[in-house]
Image 1: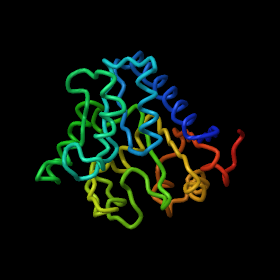
Image 2: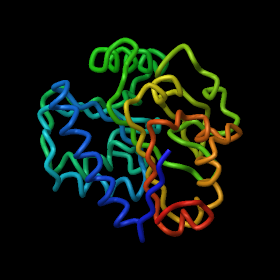
Image 3: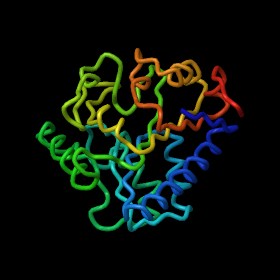
Length: 233
């Protein structure tokens, strides 16, 4: 697991956008498709805004969500709301290439199963995403894989529902599909993450983030988040 430290969140966002664009070009050249799943967060929204200015083969991009809150369309708590504002208002994906989690469905278990099938239709069975972007919570969670939630033990499906966390039930990708990704991109910023980042680096399985496969991972962190971490720069 490589850690790259940049001065602040803005530089992390720009570097992350460069890395995503590079991976997109390579995947499109090799396989004719780039499948990416993105998480939420303030720095990731900056990343997506910067990504709109990068050289990306957008006609080859399939955009999935790592997780989503169960809330109405357009709700400010929805990750999709921010994905639309920061990226999709500025670039055009091919029809059917935006894969939004169907959290408005009344049958949420059925919706999760349907999203799992959608992953397979694009990324194979079992699905192998080209890149998964993850964040790190101050409690060690990633995606909506939260300490103590039964979803942590889900192994038989790639998409599952969580209990209520910070006011919302969520739909999330599970460890099996995260671990199959060709590349994991961690974007970690803010001093509140400083205590958890070394545990992520160490693969501390007592926190959800530490259970994600690390050999295909790169961490982009700002100086505040990396204050307690070992790194070259």
